[in-house]
Length: 75
Image (cartoon, rainbow, N blue to C red):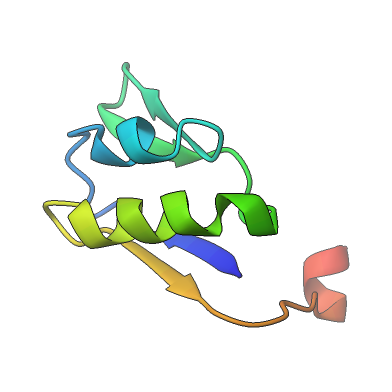
């Protein structure tokens, strides 16, 4: 699973932080969410799915399945 956050849509409501505080944080200066870990542990999947489902602006999304890193991302 990979977590994606669209900062253009995020309004800093903090619902994601309430649902999955180990994965999300709130940058109070910018009033935006921050993804602490883009690839959460399997035990966090349920909380991440809830955060995506309850985000009032639909700023969060997930990519299911195994996530691999391309060579360009490694540099």
